[in-house]
Amino acid sequence: MENLGISFDLTVVWALILALVTRIKHHDAAVRDGKWLSGLHGALYGKTLGILGLGVLGKQVAKVAIAF
Image (cartoon, rainbow, N blue to C red):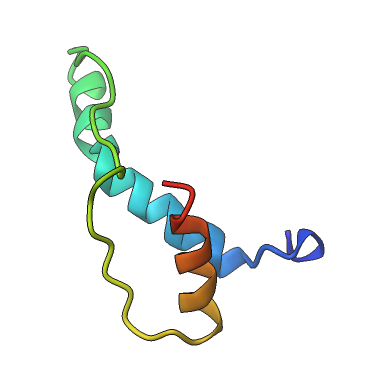
């Protein structure tokens, strides 16, 4: 993904953020127990995102966060 100007680290950071917001781990555990929870609830719109440090990765995270 580096060729597209997107670092692997940035991809991992956003995968983790979205996994936390949508509670993927909770839904995964429910499905493995034979249950089905309705929808992946969670949105980033209107929420505050704390970014520690505005180095290269921090700036990239902030730039992507604008889309939410």
